[in-house]
Amino acid sequence: MDIALHGSAAHEKRRTEVYRSVRTLDDLTEQLQKDGFQISRSGVYLHLQPRSSATHEGKRHVKTIPVKLICAQNDAHSRHIDGRFCAQNMKRLEELSSILGPQEVFYVSQDDKCRVPIGTTAANKQSPFLMHMEYRVMLPDHDWVVAAAHKLIPSVYGAVEIQKDGLGKPESVGFSGPTYMGIRSGKHSSSTALSHAVDFESLINLPEFESFANVGVDKLLKPVLVFSVDGGPDENPRYQKVIDVSIHHFLRHNLDAIFIACNAPGRSAFNRVERRMAPLSRDLSGLILPHEHFGSHLNNSGLTVDVELEKQNFQYAGETLAEIWSGSIIDSFPVIAHYIVPENSEMRADQLETRSIEWFSTHVRTSQYFTQIVKCEDTGCCSKPRGSYFTVMPSRFLPPLIPLSQSRDFGLIVPERENFESHKFPSLFAGQLLKMDIILPRSTHSFKVLPYDLYCPSIQSLLVVRCCKTCHLYFASVAILKKHMAIHREQAVSLNAPKTRPMRVAARRQRELMAVIAVEENGEHVDWMEEEELDLVGIPVPNDEAIPPRPIPVYSIDQHLSCPWINTDH
Image 1 (cartoon, helix red, strand yellow):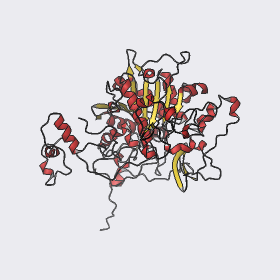
Image 2 (cartoon, helix red, strand yellow; image 1 turned 45 degrees about the vertical axis):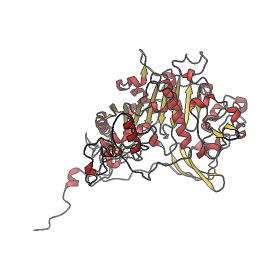
Image 3 (tube, rainbow, N blue to C red; image 1 turned 90 degrees about the vertical axis):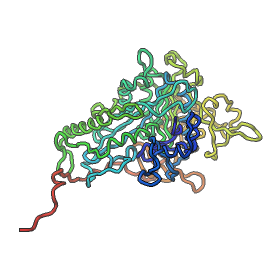
Image 4 (spheres, rainbow, N blue to C red; image 1 turned 180 degrees about the vertical axis):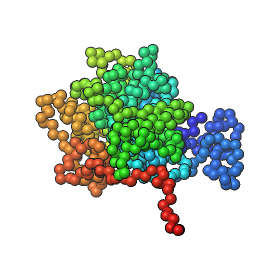
């Protein structure tokens, strides 16, 4: 029986294996009675785990199962104006995956990184991106860092099980499957699109992933690849590096299609791999990874004096963590963890298979939260399709997300691009049957080719700027648009795509700026945008230069345990 509803989120702090949107006690009782169990509502309640077994009420729960009711709480996940739009986009990918089935789709859920410190208690110092502890543990009375950047970065990939004969049902795309973790040194490596490329090529060759990733006698990668990511800087679907790596996978494995999608900002808890974080957290309870197994590489100020020895110590700590996690089992599926040495951490840029700008314009469609790469119909360019994707999607690319409304006077209509909270989107295949050009509102007639983000609330002011003035294709950023304009050389000189003028810049992260943009009257909208898209003349931009590490005292265990008092008795 499915206790958690399909699409429910992981715990907001990943501390427990609690799933939000679980069924009520009445729903559970009703389902048990339908399955032939003669049991009352109170009987079901007494078979569930109590909140506290020490209370008088808790002692009534004698024979229980590992299921617990949770009370209503005011800890809802943060909302975002694009949340409904992104959730429907993910649902459409689930519909597509379910109708193509497990023989044609490899569904991967990916989370970019969390940081696990070495030399101090891992569970107490983990980043909020990933694992926190479910149980209170006894920790040492010191938690200072050993030295700057002494952390490990695990990149987590979860294969997702797809039930056979789902035929368009989103719930046929499950949440379980094997988990792969590529662990890297936080000081000598980083989490980038090129490092994810190395991890992907590694996991598809693992025997634990064989039935999920490969098909046929030749064990080729399944023809349709779906990536569900959290939208971080190193895996955002609209970033050029991420798209370049995806094109490499597309060409290298002769795929019919690749889809990369993410949820709205602040909604990463709905990413499937997040549900596997709490079980992995438990393995780190009270764990201290060694930071000087082969000898100390730090001086008394906490600065590195032996780089090679430092790398060896990091490798030993990473391999220790990989060994611990590799023994875990989540939902009857294994966890495989490997430490990646810095020399092999990333794929070299010259190893990527690339294509021309013309090829990009024909095979790739980008949008704010979604990128599609699909074969063309020219057999001189692409090989014949390997699966049924083009039978299901004859138009090649998924059509734009367009809401519908049932009006009293005009029947089925497409609403205007306001009141986004009231928009309701049809299923992928229901939307394909409609003649949208007849029911679209007049405000959309200015687009000769409908942008995929036509009804994405946060970027309405950018839609016209991101469209090519010649062929009317829509792109996820002005930077990609300018590269595309090289095709139309005679019109390239006239390109003068206006940049967005922010009120101020609040923060910087890698290649993005947090821009505060004025919307309507006295309104503000905050969004992460690429620097090339902004007009920053006269606007101060925060500096992202790394602060040099301050010397940190390093104490041995003997010094820490020694008595600080001096005996003055003579």
